[in-house]
Image (cartoon, rainbow, N blue to C red; front, side, top):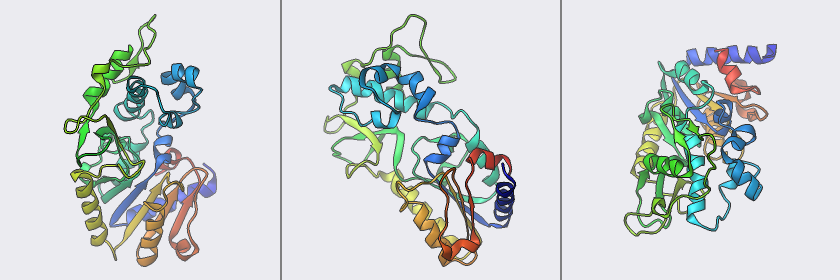
Length: 296
């Protein structure tokens, strides 16, 4: 890192030591820094057949494609879910972050849906996933407000396409195997109540299910904020852009402004800023998150 960035990282270390509590606000940039990329080699490795057929340019946009059958839809989505939810991140960024805050009173607010925080050791009772979880199904209607773990179903879908799943969870394609781009009809998930097709528990529109676990996490987060409303608290924003700034970025700015003892830190490669009202209590680091964490 450049000298100026290293100086800012040193200031971040001081703020971490000073703070009685840390609120981590995590966006997609944090998982990107951990190696969960949705384009390039990783995308081609698992979706080359779909790329050849449909011309998809990235994993994310392919997820919105109106496939003609549920068999093909779930073939695509089961790969998407498996590699982003049930495989470990290629780089230990989340583990390094956990080591920094594990002895602090912390809470995590995140728009990420890949479950990287608990896999790195973060306490699940200190996490609020606002936008859902790749590991959950819900009714597509929805006819009720429950969600369902999908790991077993997704593993069966992957194996039905020709993948062999190792103990390390890395999908393997045996030599000579041509992957199927559909799953068997009997593996399509349906709602156990109304029998309509299931869908992902991801916030895309008004059908998103905020289940009991979601509301309990929201309540724990609000209680945590209330406990430190006037205390020495660090708002640590990592990899948050402007797709949904009203969830993490703007509230962090507002809470920092309202509390003279609060500090705000933004780490995000290519996109960092702070409003002038809190600039004297802000640190903006325009560097890869993984490189910054290595300096702490």
